[in-house]
Image (cartoon, rainbow over all chains, first blue to last red; front, top):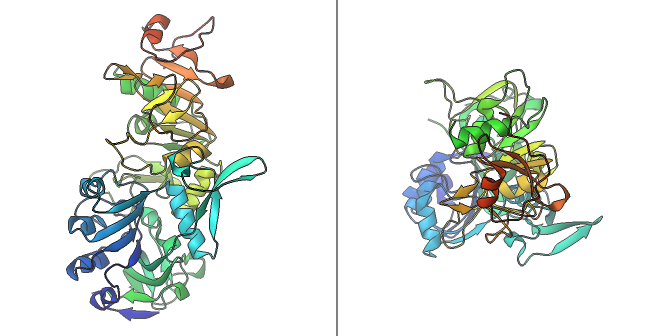
Length: 215
Length: 216
């Protein structure tokens, strides 16, 4: 793990990159990294995030400035800007069930080719997918999802990069921290090693590539 | 009593002590207001919490404690938090006893459509498909009709949420079950006759000899 300033971290991300961003309706989202993506005008991004948040908040900022060209998400109904861009075909949107979304990312981070889920069998979601029967039940084969970069937000990070999360801001962050080539983390608090007890570490330090310095 | 309150109060009667319950947005959210205090029900918020509590008092909200719509909530003593993989493992894995969702259409076989209107409303399904596929019991809480059109239809014309039939539908006019794969009128709302229910239902309903009035 290396500590790094936010400008330097975002400079590593090229336009057109695939990025996973933690957060659920902007809660548990690394806002400083998104602000810097906007400031450095990284465009054509392939964004993987649960939702599109709302304009001006979380990943919603990237739609305000039309920096996303492709979105994989589960729900974008609360961001009218993202909806308009989808209907105008200026962004390609893949909407998938939330349980499938997180399992595809988990598979990507755990070395699996994909998962078998009953969710979506017999619906529009099943179109173009392989259906596999196991013990008489039908499942869809959903393939693994990875990204070049994961942008993660934690409540606590220690000097080594061990992470702990707060309440509902955990959501997709620990799963995404497993599923990207480069993991960049912001934390509410950076604390000495030992403050996060081993049993309370959710994301172990070796998963974190860069920790954004505070202050 | 307004229709939404009636529906929420009737759904609340379905919950049992010890149940893990997921409430969707809209009328389902209101159900929590009518659960008796002595009934120990665990409410899950799919963004990673079991033990959701009411909206906090002014000044006590915290940005890391929110519901699935991003609004501030509180947590009750004994609450637990987890990531989204765990949250949907609970949902898909049959650990959630009851899910209560809104609906756009229900057909005579109990199939639910509640996530999109092609060409008009395509917000994404969020957690709805996992909830209907995986929860032990699926209860739909919705108005019986919208703009004069029955929401209970012979066959859904909107895209299905799941091929798994729901267990119960509670509307402002009736309670309908699907035992045996057929829509069956179980109860009528106070002051509503069987004939009135039939008149605004676009699907065949099995009507037993005795149809009691909703107890709320």
